[in-house]
Length: 376
Image 1 (cartoon, rainbow, N blue to C red):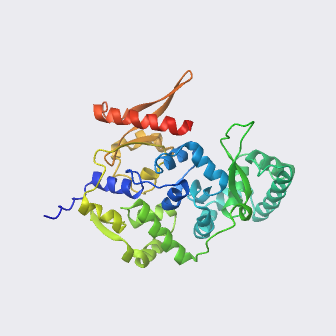
Image 2: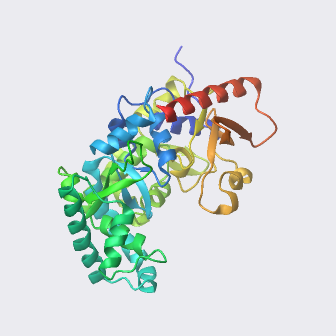
Image 3: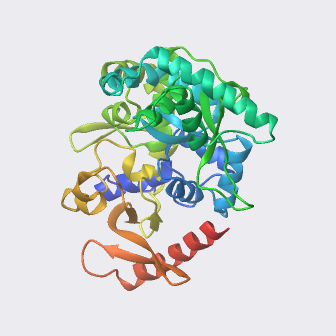
């Protein structure tokens, strides 16, 4: 007899998302593969971003993700929502072509407050190019943020009160600068990246027109994040909803529509097939980083996170997402990194009571994997 089709529930929808994102043992062989599949991964907090990639590339260590940043096979920049993401280098320019104009308009009032003009941004571009050229002649591959800020100040461009970071972000939004290799100090791995000229670091960029690019961005978002709604995509990408809906018409023949909770969710045919074959992950347990795409990558997070627990993940709605524990497709708590003397560990913070014994064992296994990953 044919297998009975799985009835969608919030937990099933969550597990479908885990499968789409490569989090159910179906990850990717390399860091660039994982990042390109996700299209853009939230990376404001670098340590969280490293573990987010590590969860999607079995056997990877943090040093391997850093190596991809050093080699330029993965880049980190501000493609949308004014926050840092990891992307495939070939994707950054065309995505900026879709998103940067709207973001710059949104930042216009703040730039007026900071007395930032288009001439100031062009001036800082010239300063940044000259600074990186001098550093390169000295054998250094790029400039730190502090070096650029110092050069800006020496040229009369103030950097106080966030003016410097807005200038720097504007240079990246215009594809003049991009973050390149990690900044090491005295043989130690640094915690920031060097800034380098965009065209020198990324020499192979795809070129897509706006309509074609939005359609591709939507298709790839649904493929890696589905089931998701067109409103989820519009929030995630900051593409206006009218354009997102128009793009959906172009790609919906390659996607599957799933009706749930009175709305239309979209997912790839491969993910939709799991409803017939049996959706995996009912006993899965993951310790995901803060800001992970599993939770952050959607406008509506109620499918996987009960609304009454939302402020335990984002205290005070301050925009800072805590690390999350995900059991069977549902967020069941947060977790923390602990330090006692020279000993580093992890501690679960379940929403309700204590973890069941099996979940406790799974969490401890995840914790060991996390500590091994970060040390590697």
